[in-house]
Image (tube, rainbow, N blue to C red; front, side, top):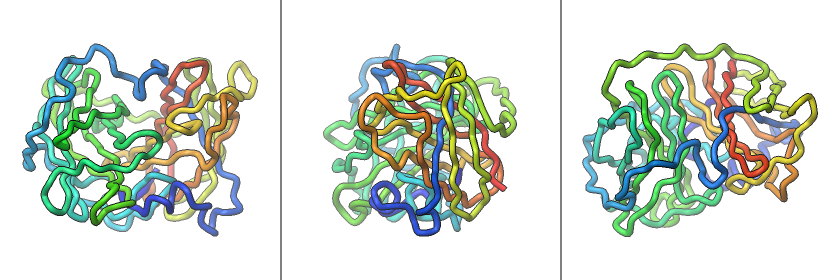
Amino acid sequence: MSISTRSTRSTSRRRPLAAAAATAVLAVALSACGSSATTHSSVNSGLPSGANAPVSPTPSAGGGMPGMPGMPGMGSGAGGGTSAGLAAEQDGYRLDAQSATLAAGRPVQYRFSITGPDGKPVTDFAVDQTKTLHFYAIRSDLTGYQHVHPVLAADGGWTADLAALQPGTWRLYASFTPNSGSGKGTDFVLSRSVTVPGQAADTPLPAAAASTTVDGYTATVQGELMAGMAHPLTVTISKDGRPVTDLQPYLDTYAHVSAFHEGDQAFAHLHPETAASGDHGGPSLTFHAELATAGDWRLFLQFQTAGQLHTAALTLHVS
């Protein structure tokens, strides 16, 4: 689903929906791989030591792709601007990393820092969905999705612990909001690409579908998506033919959704308009979706039931 990568923080996450979509009933949910509820990603075990090691930024590592113009915001937490998460630098803020290559087949650490317009590492970040920075990894064929929450050292260096990566080209995204400086209160999504050496075998993107089933949960999608227009998207979650009403809070909401555009890996992030209030979410969740780019998008929805975190994947087509 298409979004731009920088927006005023309150615009997409806390204000009511824009007038064009204010009367629409919006909703989303999906279903997929399970993972431990004690972590915030599908992988956070078996990690090497040294997670708090300081970063020595090397601006040339893993260079970012050029921005994509004309990508308006979508949903909340998407960010605004013009890069759709495909740039390493925006408005003076830069994602600096130590390496453009990561090892295959074993857990790895990706060390990086966010530097501000003054060239110094940023250490003051606002909290978004209980975290000061959200970090995503995905391969160029939109497989291998990971969503983790790195550790920040006192010197401004971050360490993201990633599960084993398959050979190929990966893009790593940092989503954050400075809590001071010229970018205070503004969402950013910056990214860099890395190479994982080895024989890469691309997986074809699954065809767009109205439903998906995983871990016993079925998500059924309703709504026609059109590029450049705000549309409602409703997904109903069921299990064994019965509506699911026991979704538990995850990152202060009943679902966390990330999306990546086929081909260029443009990034989108949205989450329900309704805040979580106990272990009784579902069967429907509400989202505002404004999709600027036509084509197929791979959506990853994370939701929690009975202490288990599930990560669901679904391909949606935008006309």
